[in-house]
Image (cartoon, rainbow, N blue to C red):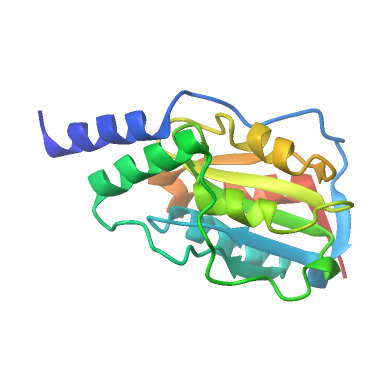
Length: 194
């Protein structure tokens, strides 16, 4: 078996079952000023970071990287094993930073890799660390074949008092060529008031 095939098989097992973006959100995009938009994300490989930075360029919002105090292993296999354990346990690792004046944001894009069919544990920590009452949450996920899986559904459980807009799921392997797809999706879910 060649390296590429082996890597794909590992990624598929790591990322879990197939899923899709969607939900019963309103068709019209939420309208807000760019100063009221937060793009919070966790990225292990850099794929979710790229998506978050693209969303920031499109919206003019504030970028916030979700960082655990203890970083995940840089070795892929070690990270996969730790992620599997933490996802099964519903872990919420301690985070290294906080969003300043979280209350000023109306719209929060929340980005995560799809790990074992759910959000990465640092994203769970982020979501449980703030009051999302009255906020609009827009999930975005990078994946290796598992799509949205349960990521959005699990975010909705944690942020039960928030409004949600259609989540976006983007293949990690093609994320750097997906700027048009990201722009189309962002325009569907949010409109920036000038």
